Length: 551
Image (cartoon, rainbow, N blue to C red; front, top):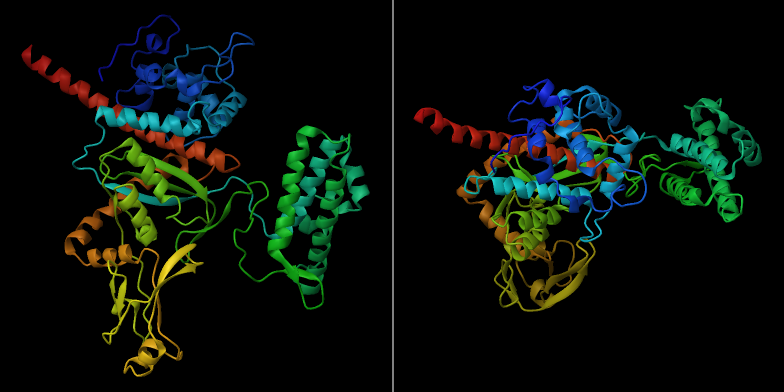
């Protein structure tokens, strides 16, 4: 795409004041040249100020450029981005603003990010996703990716949440204090009166543990306070729910009150249990999908490795390890397995780049179901280590049985073939799975009975994976040296993770999963635009060289 010269129409233009303010090959240089062409107006249909009525608003293109510039380096806060936009001459040139003029406020940028979280009226797709995919298409059309040399890799990385993560006592205490503050605002009542009505004077304290003058190492005293907090939560939630429809409660705050009530009840349900003396104690168990933060209720405990844990979200991405282009990405809670959003990433990537045929990934993506969906439905081969085989000493493994999937037959290690195949429900995989059964009389006289059936003396039952055929094919293919050599290139995918982290992807800068989605996609757009800027600069240099030689 040829670069067009920027026409300087004002003495206050940044490029008139400082002609060398834009460095070729950088994101500000690229946006100053092509922001109007690469951010079409249909992406921002519905942004305020676009109609005939009402006052003018900041153009969506200017705010989009500011959002991208915010994450173009190491990532900064909204306030810091707005402050820099008012003084940085390169940023003002990229945004199309004159020196000394006004700059979008922090609130305007925050409102625009919330606008990007909404779904587009025509496509019903989140606007941040449409914007990211539009940039990816421009990169692909410009030739950022060499399809012959591309190595598509899929991986994930933690993102720490913005909200505070608390233990059970602080979740209950801090949650009750914040609920009291919300109730005081909703009913226009002083907080002192709310504390008196609820008979909880400790709500006025700054710290939950500091409000109760006990030895927190004493199990009896600790159980007494936890019991009181749990009972207070139940009592307060019941009081609020009964009085919520009253005329004194602000309608705009009712949903927030109900949401906080649900979160507190969830903490009581997940974290507390009855002790031996009848009092409530913190449960010594692992709760599924445990709530860890009231200010960031979608954050979860995650595990990067067996020994390394984190609190917050997880960024999943698919990109080219050679060029660095991030093709598709998403953000989930920290406890979501890597394979769960993988098929959506692959499907979205194939819609953008039809030449995608093979993706490299680690063991977390090696499940049979994901392989089946990627190969059969999306036409993509997933190169990843298959799940490990659990071996028990002195026991025959599932791999010792020969399965004829075409004729629905299974042959045991003793050479006995069974055609008794049944479909049973698998709660582990949430679908039906095949089950082969051998007659008990046949197994009783089998010399391999002890190693095959073990202590059970009934008929031999062989439960298969719902996608057993794909799983066995993957294990056979994994033994091929050529596939192992191809898989070694997966480590180059760490480049994509490092780019996201370097631009501020390790720490969420706002509350909630939707805000984390906008942040991650803005970082991906900044990374992709940098590649695009370098590619266009190289193309322009190649066009200029022959002219110099001819002269």
